[in-house]
Image (cartoon, rainbow, N blue to C red; front, side):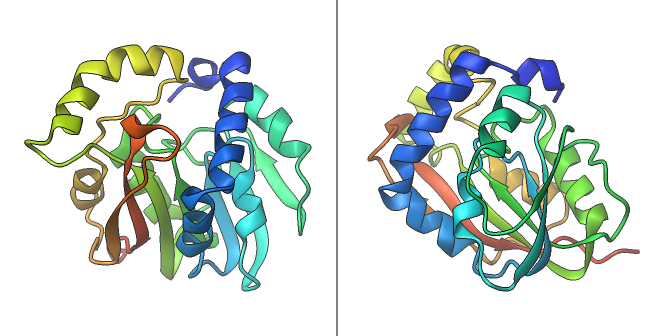
Length: 212
């Protein structure tokens, strides 16, 4: 994922509005649920407009966020925060952090836009300390054989062009499994209030493979 590929100022403003609307519906509650196990130094991959910062549990003591889009960084920097946030320009495939340097990670509506989800997940495993958790809230492709899944496949290219590279038909659970993660803590959810094309979600906690 190249930074300039995702820096779409007009889309950033639209996405900020859409995610604000999501905060008033089920997606806002899901952010809180997804972050329940976060603690210590939390890495947010793809901060976007920064709505996740309103859902941090008390166990989080520090936040470092990586965001490739300058427009998104400008929006998130203006958001009210409960604690200082170290905001870094960077991409998920090459996280600018040392090995084993964070206690937990949040992946929220970001794996749909990265160029290589498996590479991002391997990077997350690298920077996460042993025993740390990966908090997940991702929209995914609908189940095989479903009408929605076929619609997602058909509209994926056009949607990505207008939505900052977002691909609605990503098979994200398969990416977790390919990266060696334990996905038993992930659940399927559906919310069609905001954007039906992005209705199916994965939510919960994923565990990366043990180092070595």
